[in-house]
Image (cartoon, rainbow, N blue to C red; front, side):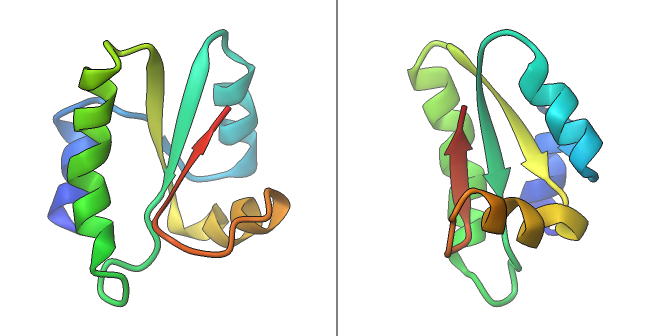
Length: 93
């Protein structure tokens, strides 16, 4: 995992959603949610940028939404189910 993605989980304590059940459980909690779909950081150089920008947006919007990182195993399924074509992506619910 890219170090900037690991930082989101380890330092910022964002949930790492690795299966669809964890996504559904996360989205079932009250509030506004942002799921960060990083894509492949080797192919998508923007992934590292997005991993820096999203925490800043979270702060700028006074933490009015929560954030979670989507794992590789479910990334494609989640993107397809919501019509997202590109990564990195931020999905707001």
